[in-house]
Amino acid sequence: MPLGRIGFRAGLAAATATVAYDIVQILQVAGVLHFPADEILIFGTSLCIVVPFVLEILAFHYTSPVDTRFWTHAALIFTTIYAVFGTANYVVQLATVIPAKLRGVADAVRVLEQTPHSLLWDFDAIAYLMMGLAALFVIPALGDASVERRARLACMAHVAATVLSGIVYFYPTYSQKLLLIGFPWAVTAPLFMLLVGTVVRAREARGRRLTNGGEEL
Image (tube, rainbow, N blue to C red; front, side, top):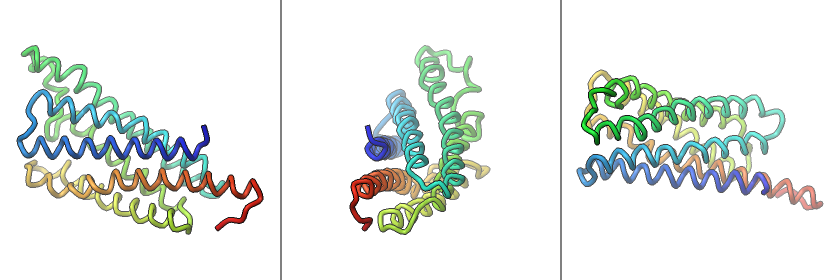
């Protein structure tokens, strides 16, 4: 399968999973979803972002010009850090913490529960800060084509939204009102994932046209 198709489909899958996470998070805050459904869906949709996002950035790296590979390699490294911390957290919540709560033995795994300013809360924070750094290092690897300019703007917006999310994670006192500060992330994350995937597809298509003797538009 061509890298362009892999990158675009992976970006679309990552963006879709992120939108699903956004919806579940909104429903939880609104009081529509309750335990255990809310936590299962939140951590489940979060876990679904990981693999597609890694594959998308990997495809972006391999479709980038050689002189930008330092930046794309950096983006790939930070994506890997995101994947490690995120996956560790989501699997622990889904496979250990939630089942323990359902069995009534939550005290035995209290240290592993993701609550504000807990160990796994910090894991979650690190994961999404690393995703923001990945978006930051994607920026210098984007060119001047219109699709790449749009992706650059989306990445810049996501970097700014990541800073706001950092405030939510590390502000001394957590509240649902504080959570609203991080709401832009819910828009910028799926947007930049989708647009970077579109860039990968466009690059592969442009390379195919040039290989076939066509002119670059």
